[in-house]
Length: 402
Image (cartoon, rainbow, N blue to C red; front, side, top):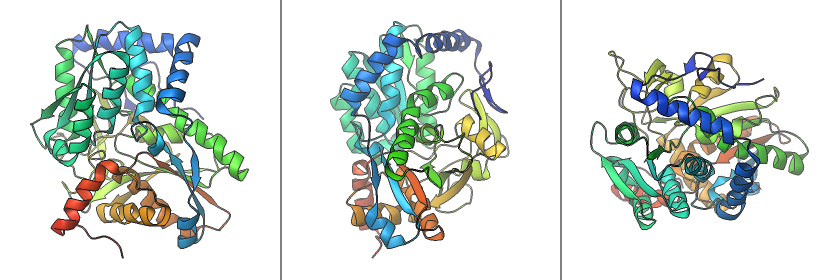
């Protein structure tokens, strides 16, 4: 099967472009550049060089022997994107897009970030390529992710707080887009997830597909068979679509995305877009969306700053519609339990985002036979979340499992 978008950028009923007229030629220019360079031998040679020697690919596939034994049932493997340079999958995409921006003659980079991992990856790659960099980040997320803010600033980026609305990821995207429009001739907007107007969802999937290609080869080498289920967390959906892309044609492989149910499935307490959302338009594309009675984005929440977005990548919406992937939820409490459990059984501290996917694997494993394999994308490491978890434990807002 294929989920390549049509000429207008739609995956089934989702995607496309919903833009003011002055941005249409900008997106046309980007589309032409991506189509020109995506298979260009020199571009691919340079991209592969930086993936190997800057990012540190390939990332390993790790068997969680202790955790699997503790849970019983299926074997759990982790695709270790947390071991990439900078600690997450985001750098796969920033390297590709900044190489593209350089070929387009752009001098400045602008980006949004939620948990800060995309901002850190953008700042680092911009520093590597000698480009100016501005990162828009919600003021609430800046408070939660002070370490990542400092890392961005260390590498020369200017971090601009988004002060409107809930002051999280949605507002960071709003303000980054507004700033980009002011100088689109010289500036490249480096979108961090598989969302936004065409060609961004297709382009981000393309650069993140390395996750799935490697994971598929690695599990066949280690187990001589494909996994029973592949699992990834879903906010906007870039790490998930990168993993899923390699298994879409394997009908026997179940695909599960995990969204944050936060404090509960009442409005304002979660960001479970594919679970409870309805079709809508946000940030220049159509997809499932959490919205109020007026069609405006609804308030969202997650313990994880990288998952609190009221929409989702259009390819995920299409995969839901056609039944090729299923989307479930994990709560804050589930994620915290998985965060501590992996730390204590395997000595690996996962990002809170990734802990949502791990929580689903921990639920699923005991229900499957011992010869089944679950493959989880560990999209990032939890160093960035340790201070937040420590504060919440001290305040009594969460409790560590015994």
